[in-house]
Image 1 (cartoon, helix red, strand yellow):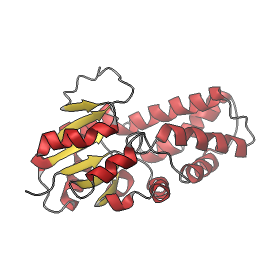
Image 2 (cartoon, rainbow, N blue to C red):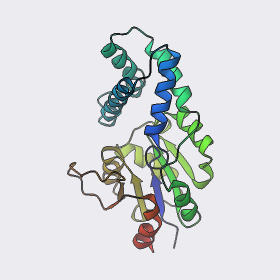
Image 3 (tube, one colour):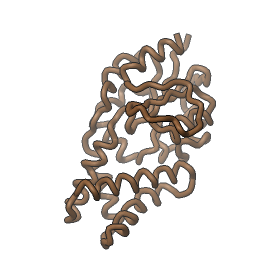
Length: 231
């Protein structure tokens, strides 16, 4: 039997993006001479999340996400700053360091060698490269697929099909995607015709109407789940 293929989302599945985002935007605001209050940081986070959702639906492109989020922020705050300068600062800070989601390191150690592991991320290539280097987890993965480099974004079927073409001896029936986003990871997995597992540590209610194959709240549960599914 060939080893099953496990596709992992990166942000808020293996690495804690929200914690990294909060730190990076606070540093960016300070660099610009602005007070990084909780209110401003929360506003940025809300704007950023909305912009990425719009990217997933194809409403806007990547550049409109990365620069547009700062244009919207500064506009709502009534400030005149360079959005492109803010983007560059923010990406630099975000690419430095990392925070793991609870149980992520132990999970990867348990899965290594038994499964073929891959990352599928919509994040910015240079930022993800920096975070992965800091975390030191690249050796766990056969390949790391970044949408900016693939040419399509999750949840599009094209993104996954391009990934599948690069996976040697790919078998759709022996493949699962694990991620925290219903609109990106789970919808993408459904479109691609592979098994889906929703990582839902906050116990959110599924109001998307999507039929998820599996759901778990802790990464420590992943090895037993995969054992049950594939062996």
